[in-house]
Length: 252
Image (cartoon, rainbow, N blue to C red):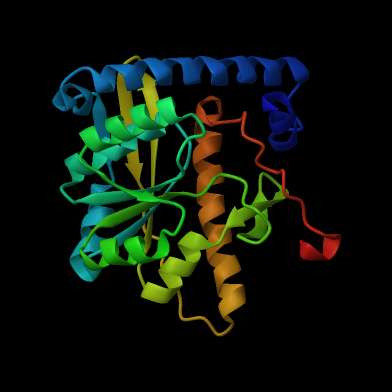
């Protein structure tokens, strides 16, 4: 799956270069697993010292003007560390999560996330708790780089190929008039991580609600692709991102 996805994303790369990138991506996942174990078993302040932060003024401006914010992120870098980054920004945060298939791993993940002080919102039935979190002045983060079932997604370009992408973040932004702040993390060295906060994506007043939803989802997906291209070995290439296919070429 890793190699197949890399062939879709980087068709111009020689096979040996894609194989090298695949190995690097799995090495990155191994390092991430070790870092998460360390997060569980040492003071949170030690983990926060590993971070550098750039662009926090974008979050500050959104929170100052709107009193709440939506966060776009992805399974890039040590994405679980982002649950701790809100401590450096000074704002309470919530994350929409899907329970892991393994109950043991899910318990460990929940313990790690709660240690950072972030609020967890189950993806199943998330609408009401997300709206409540926004009402209480939270930053609400959604990972938008996974394949979406046909009933949940819209097709937008991702590395030059139509990818079924959850409409949830765009729906929330358009309905609540809340800006989306893209925030990504990347490993810059052993035990060193950089958090990049980007200018907000502002929902515009839609003339056509469906078109506005697709357009905003496409902008979110483009932001994710740009971040992945910066450090391609640090994305979760083993995920079947293009599994759901358009019913016809007209869907493009």
